[in-house]
Length: 159
Image (cartoon, rainbow, N blue to C red):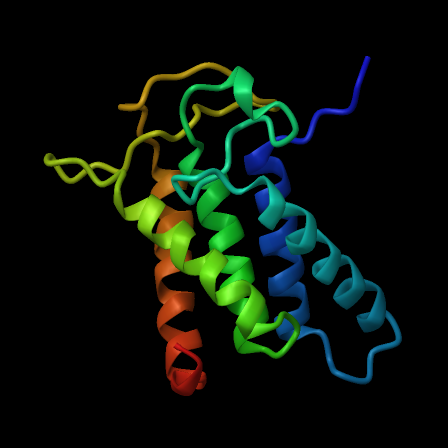
């Protein structure tokens, strides 16, 4: 009977807003709405980041899920890095969140080259093992890594 906040679902939303803002003209009357929504999400998410740098499938009931969820976490890292690079999020506050997230993500690259701990296709948080690997997790991981590179090129003095 309570709301479910699913890591990957929320990750898609946050990454999607970053993409919308990338292409929405600065003078578009809808832009402030998207910017405000974009700013609110990471403020809440950084308090939910695990000690390993990643987020669990159920954002508000992390204790119910033993493994981090790599695809949702990668979308969050991508979006937060994008927000820092584009001046929407504070570098002082969010660079450390991005860095912890990235360290957590690369810890799930396994010896055989797979990126693991990715929940299978679904519509809500669910069970899976640490070896679960799916291409959408890899895509989100690549988005996060490429945005971190762009963020670092844009503001190297804030490292």
